[in-house]
Image 1 (spheres, helix red, strand yellow):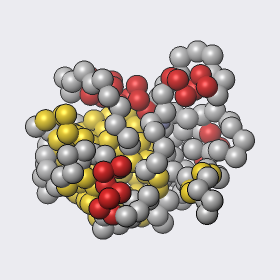
Image 2 (cartoon, rainbow, N blue to C red):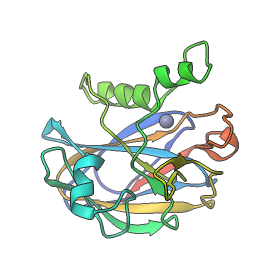
Image 3 (tube, helix red, strand yellow):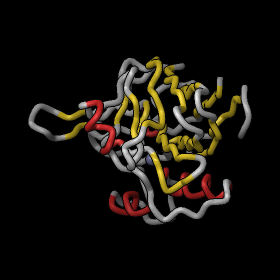
Image 4 (cartoon, rainbow, N blue to C red):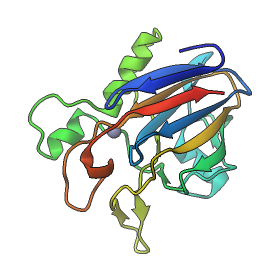
Length: 204
Ligand SMILES: [Zn+2]
């Protein structure tokens, strides 16, 4: 996907890359609600530079992305602005992208789709072989830090049609992955009812 005025469906459990020019806005939507969206962004002119939540925390002083925040790259330069939050603040940027190792740790015995593989495939389709999986921003994920520092992921209560609007501050390649997490784990729900659904991405 490239150019302006684009709208695309990211099928359930899959990932897609799209190009966003400096100054362009784009919207990510969970049409059915409750679907985690792993989000990655690279400098389109140098994919060694990517969005990094850990570097962003220093600037925003928040473990959770909020409307108005600017995400930084690992070189601490602005890359994407969080313009509008249509998901009531239910987002995460603590959890790593899911991968084959994680699914095996929780008992999956065969190959399983993952956000890490979705990212690698999407970047291959752009002509890049990547060897590092950056920390994603997990939009529409209801994970929380309790007062004592422990983590919880109660039911995903993100409403149908919830969205975020972002603005690229440089030319970017962005990747959206419909998190394929479909394993039922006690007290740890990533996608509502552990049933992944599609996402919608629109460059506006
Ligand atoms: Zn995932």
